[in-house]
Amino acid sequence: MSDQIKIRPAEGKWTIRAGGAVLGESLNALSVVEGDNPAVIYFPKDDVAMAFLDKSETVTTCPYRGEARHYSIQTKSTVIEDAGWIFDAPVEDLSALKDHIAFYADKATVECT
Image 1 (cartoon, rainbow, N blue to C red):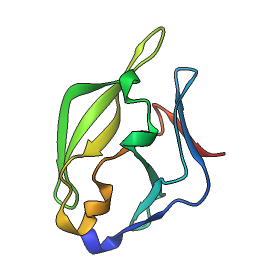
Image 2: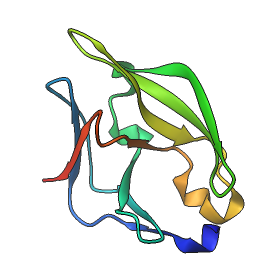
Image 3: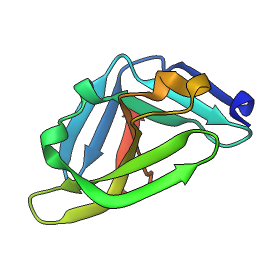
Image 4: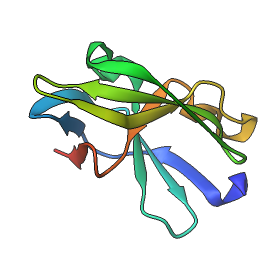
């Protein structure tokens, strides 16, 4: 299945917003497409204000990508639980995902600016 996952540089400048704040901007984001699903944008951790994110207790396993550790976003007024995820040790074929974080579309806004 990992052969159906395509990783490419995401062209342009990508921004992640949540809770009324910009959490990150990147010119080095990755576009990840699995099969016919829409692309998911992965941001380099270094381009995200990780101080606003807290590791959650949630860890999921994908047989095609590896183990994903989830993060919650701390905003001024609330916590957005399990808003993003990181594959600390992705499967070998997808090693480009290491040190990149993606966010759920219903919990954060990711856009090309």
